Length: 450
Image (cartoon, rainbow, N blue to C red; front, side, top):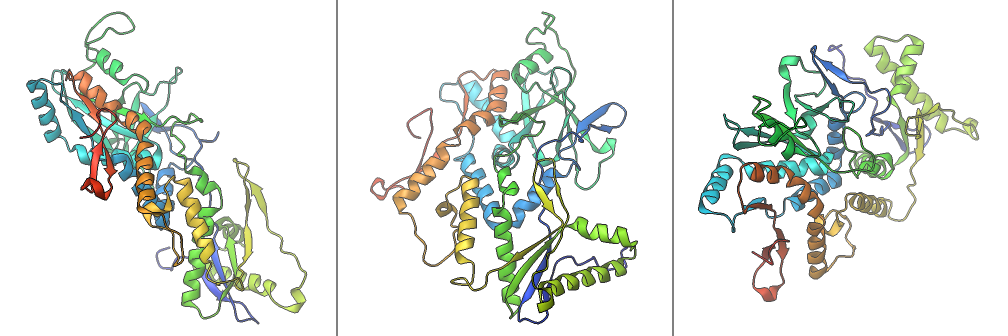
């Protein structure tokens, strides 16, 4: 297989008889976020089972690839993570004793809190959940380490009859299932009451049997924080999932392909022909073609047939038949879709279309396009400085529910370590006006300003 070049499904070909070209590309598949009925637990060794993330367990990596393909979407995601980060995480110790202040200072020095916090903010915005691992000292009396586990490398164990998930599996699941010795198996604290669960395990609270005793020698636990969603699944469905199920993500990408083709080719692109990978697979199977070089030649032949169908007097009025099927979400999927590109429209560069597509992506990501500077064009309206300050303030204010969720593990650390008077906080960055003689100040919901 390595002796042949990969089969070229994407190409730009001349349309015979006219001064125009056609763009062939593989169909942009929709990413399925929900677990469907055919997804079953996967065993790890003899004792453990986990729930795959997507049918092929590659859903988080597919999502990352889709986001990285689009400049606007990736910028919006980073902007949302930075907005959620605010002025950074801190533990307010104004009401604490000197001893507690010293312990908290040592905890922050011993743990890379800024990296941890920015990382979980990104996990929240990308996948709607994050995982922190807490490590206790030898006698189980104090939490001494706080470590972030990247969400895309985390998998959840199978829930029991009460809906409780007690294991988290951390490994590199990309492309292939890892061996048992390559998977880090971590006890997962109760999602609904992680502090109570930890206190019971460490013998600081009575359990269901009414007795107080040390119940485990384990000193490492995972704390899962999920964004509540209407559809309760193992892995939350991010709010921006509609972007991939709709058409605007595809439209923006197609405009980019057409513009690139126009720059590379003197003739305009008249048709965009979108062909599913399954279409080619079906041809190879039906005709018994297994040789890679012959498969490539068959792809070229089929493209020529499609182009010949699109042109010529003898083909006028003919119809093109293409197989369709309906996926589990009720979407109709075509084997072949032929889109005619209007080249005689005003401007001819799809300028208004790209602006509309960018605005739709920014709208879905809840980011005003003026804040990330993603709207192209020379003659575009722009907000005033005051409007942008207000938009920035609104964007930060909307992070309050996410901060409350992200503080779950930090409230657990503070309460378990008995740091009385301390509480987690994430001040906002408030942009100021010129008359205040400062560029910015930080404010928090707990005090007027700091």
